[in-house]
Length: 164
Image (cartoon, rainbow, N blue to C red; front, side, top):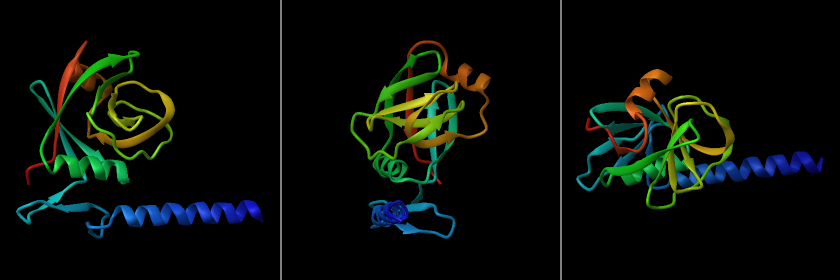
């Protein structure tokens, strides 16, 4: 009985958190968050663009407060991250500021974009299991294609929102 009450309370807290994180945003019927920029144009923030060298990749953002906070920051302008290889499974680099976390146990796949410890962006090209916050997933890219784009060693990645 106490366990069920605790589960219900936890569920209510999550729902309250979700609704409060949407304050100031319009949510359309397919759960895409629309952010109004300074010129009153609406920016669709369920997609993100990654520019890596001569390659441009698109990613679908996760539906959580972490991805929404990143999209809000990208609505102000691009973010460039200097990333380094780590553990032969990922590229990691500092975002320069902290974002809200929504950690959960995840086994990553190639193309997963993860927020680590609130302030680091990670692009996975091999599996890893840990408690992470999912930010999104690179669209339609295989492990081999991703490895070719990311290359060996350090890489500069520029994040932006689509210019529709």
